Amino acid sequence: MVLDELSAPIVLAPMAGGPSTPALAAAVSDAGGLGFVAAGYLTAESLAERLEQVERITTRPYGVNLFVPAVPSEPQCSDRYAEVLVGEARRYGVKLGRPRFDDDGWGAKLDILAARQVPVVSFTFGCPSEDVVTRMHSAGSEVWATVTTPVEAIQAIRAGADVLVAQGIEAGGHRASFADSQAADDYSVLALLQLLRDIVDVPVVAAGGIGTGAAVAAVLCAGARAAQLGTAFLGCPEAGTAQVHRDALPAATPTALTRAFTGRLARGIRNRFMAEYGGDAPIAYPEIHHVTSPLRQAGRDARDPEVVNLWAGQTHPLAQARPAGEIVRALTDEARAATSRLSGMLMPAGRW
Image 1: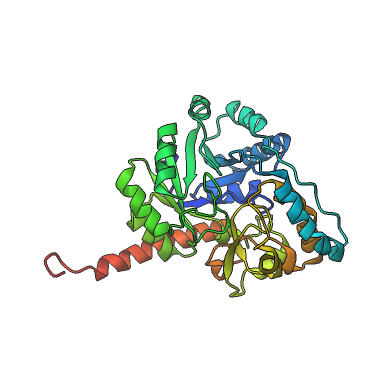
Image 2: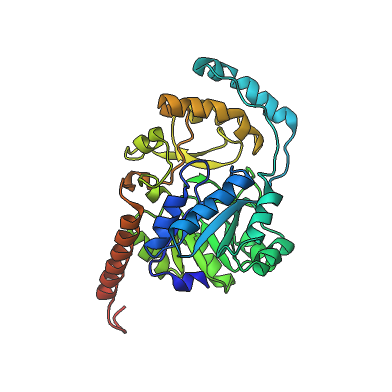
């Protein structure tokens, strides 16, 4: 089990779309945690190149995260939303993308991972089939599944997952739910962790709103084997985070859940685009992702935060612009100190 090899109980969240880089994954792994390469939005060829880069700069275990393909939405839903955004596109001098469905190179990426012994392969946006899990096991990889509810956890265990990543509602970026729904259950990370520890026997990694060593200690005390953090690493020099995104992190602006940017529920720092279009966006991923992509890129180029998907968890003001290795070591030291303080505060038996 890879978790047994870690000297730091820190897992890097696989942040697709820019922040994830081979350098960031390697830095977290070299510091004793587990770095992740996000395969989302990459071509199969680009993924292969990134895996080669990681393996050139670290000998430590690392993971790769894949998006489980969604179900195509009704075309008219995306078309209607695209019409709503025409004025925004005109304002930024760009043409909206064409709403289209794709599986994010699912088959080709699985082929790449099956051909090399990646220590950990994790899945989000759905449950991999038993056949996929068996194929990854045959390639020598552990299979991790990201879940947001107890029902999803049971499904993932039945498919053969070795580790569960319990994503709380506090987490930044896309919800990992197996099916995006208006009626989805919203569990906090601690609530979900407690429920999972009562029904599953496999290790659980806690994710969502964890930004300090004390929070790492809290989820470990609640039964997690490690804590997964993403937002805490967005400001690292090794991350590929856009400057407009970096600039937005320190402010105390609240976050919110929205489908406005991609058609799939995600948490980001509130801005004008979310406020104006969140109510219009349909459940249509990745179709809407492709529609708004040119608009979001225009915002990044202009460093205009009001039209960019500033994915971040609820504790984003705590993120620091420090090397990833320093963050891993600081979180680990703080977690140890927090655990020590807790032990000192506990009353002797019989005094509760």
